[in-house]
Image 1 (cartoon, rainbow, N blue to C red):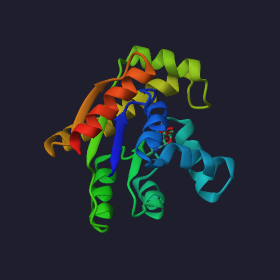
Image 2 (cartoon, protein in one colour; image 1 turned 90 degrees about the horizontal axis):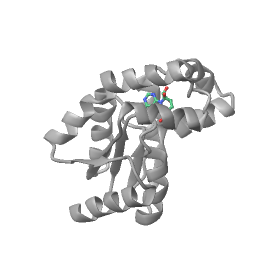
Image 3 (tube, rainbow, N blue to C red; image 1 turned 135 degrees about the vertical axis):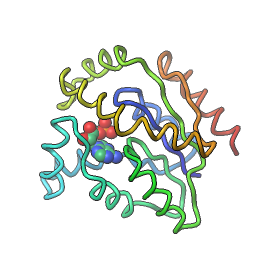
Image 4 (cartoon, rainbow, N blue to C red; image 1 turned 90 degrees about the vertical axis):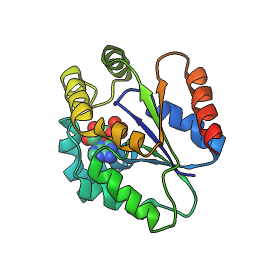
Length: 181
Ligand code: AMP
């Protein structure tokens, strides 16, 4: 089973992913975590990505797709923070098809922008300064939100209200995924 968790930065993708990988025993593939590990290791890729991440822009599709291609396995994955562009979504479909797999379910976490900004300011990560947060939300609207229609057309999209109790949201997501199997 391959699942995507889709939503704006700060919508709770990481928090919900932690619950879901435990429940469904999926491999967690978070491109944001991978990039932060590259930055921490001061690798060539990390050095390239750091400036782009600090500005709230997206790292190139080429780098991201190569990172994911390396980590795909025969077992299912939970994709968190990926895909973020239509090109990434199409590349993922092709990569999975090569393994006779597909995306089974896309969970779209919906949270209002003002709540997102409050949450992210509280989180205090390096790229969580208010002007950068607003930039990341604009990038989400322009480049990532079109994926909602992409997966809706495939009948794979399930939108869930992402504000409220973490455990109640997790339960809703688990119910949606179970209903699909
Ligand atoms: P995240 O932790 O998912 O919010 O990612 C943090 C930052 O890493 C983003 O603001 C982007 O600069 C970069 N990033 C993470 N995932 C991707 C992706 N799939 N495509 C492009 N850039 C990404």
